[in-house]
Length: 207
Image 1: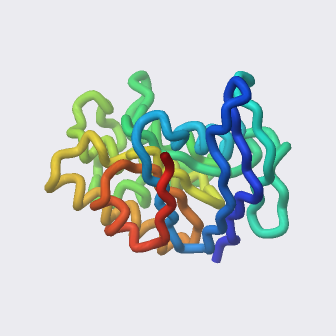
Image 2: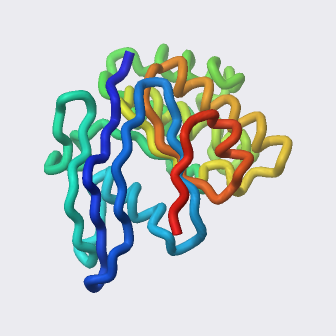
């Protein structure tokens, strides 16, 4: 079971203009939804949480997992995964190579890749070129690439927004199921009320 993700007393401003003022906790297996229009600070929040906030912003606050303060920890050591609107698969790598990219222990590479693909009904796709995949298949590969890295929290930056309605429901259900199975906290950024309802957790509205 994972640990609680906490954002405490976060204050972000740009050019002395307040942008975000947030406090929240996300227990293991739960999904917190952040909703708001463009420009309300949703992506800025995720950038701060992953340690990639632009120096143009001024930020105060603390992020922690359990009793570990991550605020000054380098991004690659925070073990916070993220899924974006676009799957962002590496075009020069096979499907298997993309998934293996996230592995911490490469010794079990082949088994880990096969297992990951099997979990999302993509058995036998190891050598496929990512450019030959459908939108839903790319989304599933991106999800498993994030999960094989064993993140201790997962951030979702509108990962369903470019999928058609039928595919959106399928992929969304798959993502939320995997989050709960892994027992990790997650933060979903979206402007879609259907995403928030499907996540089934608390909702914070910005803007």
